[in-house]
Length: 217
Length: 142
Image (cartoon, rainbow over all chains, first blue to last red; front, top):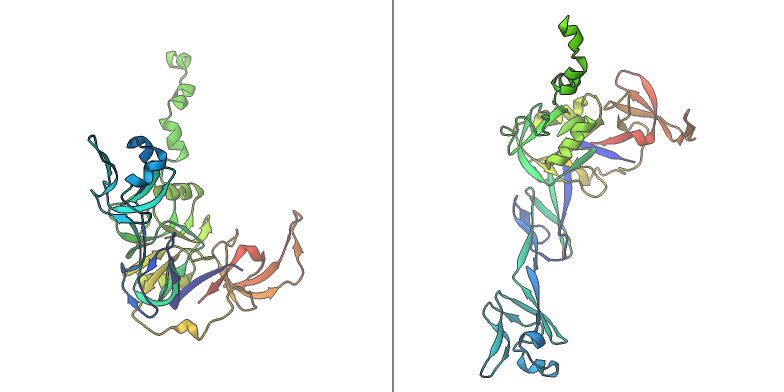
């Protein structure tokens, strides 16, 4: 059975969850404000595969001699990862902070940089439940109107009543005045040219009706 | 937040990238009075347009400063339809109208096109009773 909730006062339990496993930064019972970080995940910005055998011109069986870092060891930008000493020394320095992911078959795989993905609370409330490694459920009380359908990201703003439509370029009318606002419209329509106006503007329509013989008369 | 949509406006809305909520459906319909009252009470306040939770539609939420949790003690089975439940119809010609369930037919009905459906009798606000397929209504929850 499909339901639609319309209530002046209702407690919502809104789950917030990361797409990838991460670290949950709140605990059950914490009061969170809008914009507070609930959970975050730290992932490498990029991976780099470095072929030591070919780049440093060393024999495959001697590779381990020239690698200065262990598997899973962290490093900072500028650290030497591998070096072939000698008169014409060759070395491989890390350009970014990171971690050694694997050393195998004469190749070293590095995870470089750090991309942080944060999950923030869309409204103020209380953490009522934790979703292990992913996020939390936020509880809050307020008025609620549920829709039959909807799309898009979470948004916040002042609620205003308006009656916008889309122009013929599929742009929302009055978009400047409605910026950072949430607008209620009874019915959303296309306000492009109506069929008859479109016909009048079309060259084919005029050509079809242009009769040179009649104009000569 | 829109009451009803035209199909071509629906396409434009999707292409615009704006977050949106549809209340009643596609076509021409008046938004019911209860919904309008709540929307009027939210007018001018900071509200949140939230993506739908699992199995639910997107929602508009206006937080209050109350800290008690009313629904903990009044929780009811939400997904079953009972006599007396308030429902909203979203099939023509009754799109967007709200009524009360007065009968749930035990036997499946057969439409003129041969499709079998479970029918529900709904009494609308103007005392008119209509028989509609259960798929064409949504149960309204307080």
